[in-house]
Amino acid sequence: MTVYFIGAGPGAADLITLRGARTLARCAVCLYAGSLVPRELLAECPPDARLVDTARLDLDQITAELVAAHTAGHDVARLHSGDPSVFSAVAEQMRRLDAAGVPYEMVPGVPAFAAAAAALGRELTVPTVGQTVILTRVAQRATPMPEGEDLATLGRSGALLVVHLAARHVERVVAELLPHYGADCPAAVVAMASRPDELVLRGTLETIAEQTVAADITRTAVIMVGRTLGAEQFSDSYLYSVDRERPA
Image: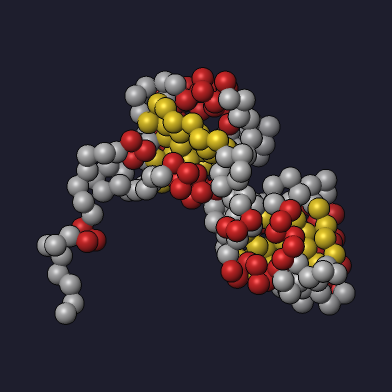
C-alpha cells in the first residue's frame, strides 16, 4: 500500500486541492499535524478511518505508524500544512520509508507564501521591479542554516524575501536586512494566512518589527521584504503586449 504526503494548504480547509481531498477520502489511516491542520479536513476521511495526531510524536513514532499501516494493507494519508515541498520535514520521513521498502507519493498543496500574497493582494514578481522570490528561514533553536544562506548573504540579491518560521525573531530579521534593502523598503507580515483569524501587517523595514511585536505575532506567520510589495509604477508584462506576435 502507499503513503501519501498531502499538502493540506495554509489553513483554510477549502484550500486543499481536489486531488488531496480525494486521496484523503480513500485512505484508511490519516496522520495529521494537529496544531496546524484544520480539523474540518478530517471530515474528508472515511468515517471509520484511524486518525493519528502527530503533534506529540517524534520521527521514529511517526515512521512506525506509517510502516504499521502499510503492513496492515492500508493506504495512509500523511497531512502536512502548506505544501510538502517546503519546510515540511518530509525528506527524513521519505528516507525512512525508502529504507523500510514502503512506497509513497507527494500531493502538492497551496504554500503559505502564496496565501500570504493573496492576503496582501500582491503579485510577488512584478515586471522591471523584481522577478525573483527567495523562500528561507532563520536559525535559532532549530537546524542550522547551511553556509551562505544567512539573511545578510541572501539580502545582497535585492530579491523579494519570504522568511518562514521567524516571526518571533522579526527584530533580528530587520537588523540583518536593513543594510541591503534600506529602511524605506516595503515589508509585510501575514499571520494565520487564509484562516478566520488572519492578520496582515503592512509597513517598511523601519516599522514592521514594532508592528509585529505590538500585535504579539510569534508563530504561523511569514515575513516578506522587497520592492515588489509596493510597486506601482512599472512596465506592463510582455505576455499580453500588443507588440507581441501571436499565432493566427
